[in-house]
Length: 111
Image (cartoon, rainbow, N blue to C red):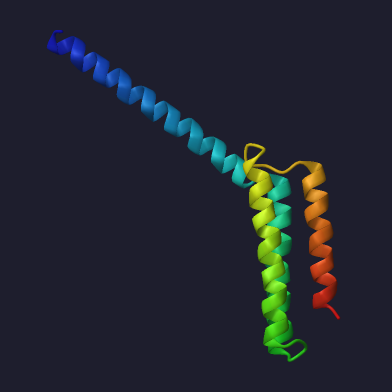
């Protein structure tokens, strides 16, 4: 094989790899910011801040805060698991289920 043919094949291979990497990163960026995932993760972040505030104001104990955060970690893990099965986004049913679980933790925080 001539040098120019080898060079052309190498350039084609590099271009193919670069095109695939660019498409994948653009797809993941969109999916990471999918509206349903953003909403669920925003609620989890908000609940974590509420837990911190309640511990600071002696409304709940550190042990209770640890348990609530463990429940939130479970919800976040479920969100990631669900998203991993649907091209990194959540279905409406999954979002509703996660919101119900978050509501349960939220009611425990506000007691």
